[in-house]
Amino acid sequence: MRCGSTAAAIALCVILAAARADARTWRVERDGSGEFTTLQPALDGAAPGDTILIGPGRYTEFAPFDGPGGLEPTYAGVGVDNLTLRGTDRDAVIIGPSVASFQGFGPKGIYTTWDVRTVRIEQLTVENVRDGAYLVGQVLVDDCVFRKCDLGVSGVDDRELVVRRCRFEGNIGDGMLAIGWGGTGVEVSDCRFVDNVTGLDFLRTPNGIVSHCTFQGGRVGVQYEQGASGTVADCSFTNVQVAAAAAALLADLRLDRNVMTGGTEQIVVDSSSHISGTQNTLNGGSYATVEFNGNCTADFHGNDILKRGGWLVYADTYLGAAFTIDLQNNYWGLTDAAAIAAAIRDGNDDPSIHAVVEFEPFAGGTVPTAQLSIGELKARYQTQPAPKR
Image (cartoon, rainbow, N blue to C red; front, side, top):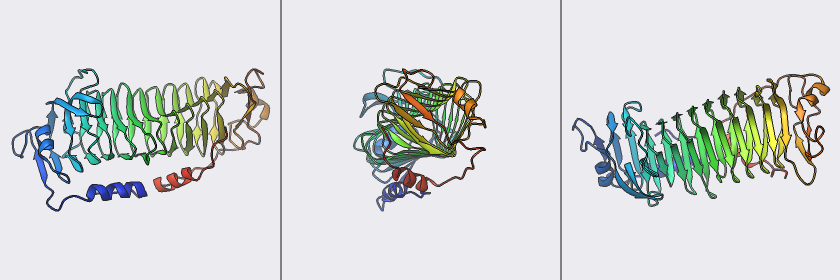
């Protein structure tokens, strides 16, 4: 077992490792060489601490399974605590049909009940199902692929969800959706998101940490909404259509050392949300590089904010008291204050917009970058001052 360096990841690994002394490994093999040939009998017969080792093949058998979202057709229903589901080959072990056929809110690929407090899932592929993995509890997902699902991974609970080294490809909704009500948060690292409608969506999730991930294509790369908070660091975003990163509905998002290229806009901040961060390289959107709407604020310094056809900054729908959007000490790719101001739309252009972008002083050249570990990122985010509203 390879654990991460943060306290949460270490605690999760300790819990997952605390198996019974007589824990068993059950082999599921299509050719009959293991104890089982299909998944559900192996899962039903396991005990806490056991490992289900899954051999190559496509697993297409499903049956009704009663989980937190109700009774749904399911390929791998997990009702036993502290199990490990491990494929022998990530690309050769496939859960789900070759062609999608959604049924209501199912079928689900991997579905855990409320009674499952911890589970580990690794080295397998789930495709063509409604939810690739619908998870509650304290979960580690490692080195998996979620492809052509409605939702790749849905995490719902008040505990820890750790996702690392996974690929999310061509999911028609969210590659990953994390919903939280005050738990210890979510960590996503070293993952790849390709052509999902939304790559990664945090809904009411506190302390959602994303690092060293790549986002390519799709409509939105990563989104924090409805009071969600967290940090996105050391990630790359390429040709995401609408927004590489978005914060909406009272979200609080920190961005550090990310590179964003292509798309309509690269950062969108909406509905009383707040962004902060440094050492990002924003290579410009076709409409605007950064957009602020609805009484949002910022402490965003030491970044490269560049122009590609559209506005550098576009501010709109600021009502009531006057707002200041603090974008001082950034490099704008321009050396003339008048040229920078001409590429920014705010209350100086339309008095009905009660917000002004503060961009002076500004840097005369590009800013350096330096990467941090996940532990340093979490500590850095948690020590940030409360956002200005």
